[in-house]
Length: 220
Image 1 (spheres, rainbow, N blue to C red):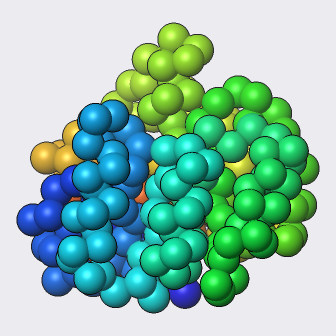
Image 2: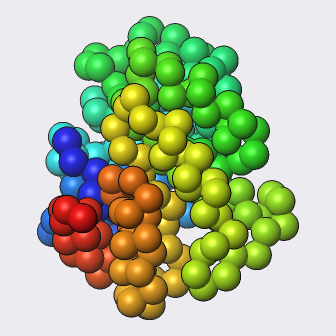
């Protein structure tokens, strides 16, 4: 599977889910976490089931461990794990999956806290489940009161560290670009992280998918 474009879609928005599968995103991530209101997360699971999505190219971003039951019973191929911080956390997920999964479930950790970034070595070395990791800069920035400027220089060292620690696994997935109307800015961000060694980008809008695919398909 390629990870040039990883499109995140709110799990409670049926129209956006159906639209996602008309696009050429390498991977679609149906969200049960931050983009879904707390009181709609169970309903989101019903909507996802109703949409009868292509599970071969679909991961679920879980909100907590209780969502594992939904992932495994519906036979999704993988999960995005928010706020991954320790190997212990991964061991707990691994045990839960072993008890419930009907097929092998991939886990992609999202590194979005100082604690998680400090434990990159043990997270990347968890070869039982981890083949690739992803960066989430927005919650990280909030947690340390970091204001990110247009050129994103404030997160450059975090990105370099993630690439360096990922040298024995697949090239990591970079954080999303929140100003989805600024496609030039998105393209600039993609080019920057491609040069750093990232293999793909989290997308939050359909218009970002084509750009991401093009840039991460190119060779420098």
